[in-house]
Image (cartoon, rainbow, N blue to C red; front, side, top):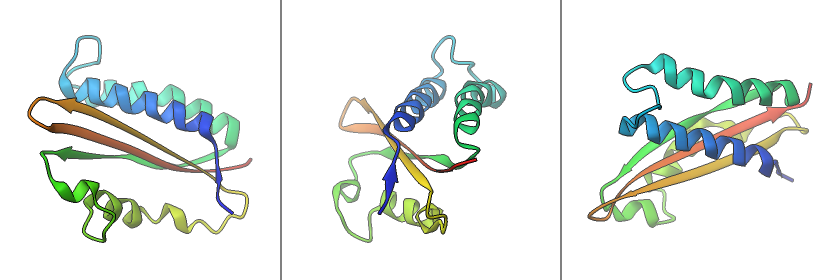
Amino acid sequence: MTRWDYGVCKVLRDMLLSFESHAQGEEGAGVGTNASLALAAERPLAQLSAAYGSVYGFPLHFSDAGDARLLELTDDNPVLKAVRNTRIHESEDSKAVFALAVYIHPYPNRMGSVWLYIACLTDK
């Protein structure tokens, strides 16, 4: 049975929102520096590490320029391929808890920015 922590999903989703703000170059998002982006993620990840002990995961980013494959449940879907390639789902820890967050930022002309954060958390 797969265990999910929906509170962690909320934390990760908030991080994804800050990543998109950084990518857009919004004021206050630390434009132009990867260090500022790392600092934005450092505090929430430190809190998760304190609560769980071990956090393994990372964000994935996709540009949606109207590619219909992003909506299909097929092996050709680039998002599904990327998630499978993380191999996070292959954790052998029976007490592992998973979190998945998705943020989609819409743009004009049926374009969008798709962010996904997948994580595996293990108890101390």
